[in-house]
Image 1: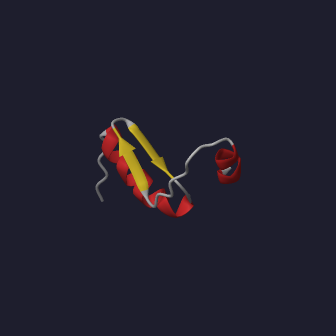
Image 2: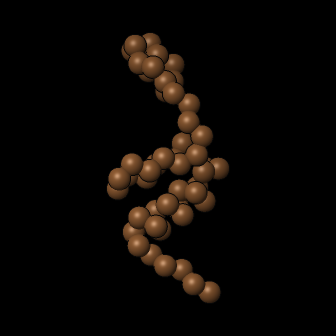
Length: 50
């Protein structure tokens, strides 16, 4: 996808981790899944207790 984007004239930025912007939560790859789920739980207002 990066090659196609660059051929179209776009600039790509590599980002590690999870990005939260208002109500949007996104992650770049599966290693970021734990952080993604943690942010999603906070955003949805879910509490987990053991």
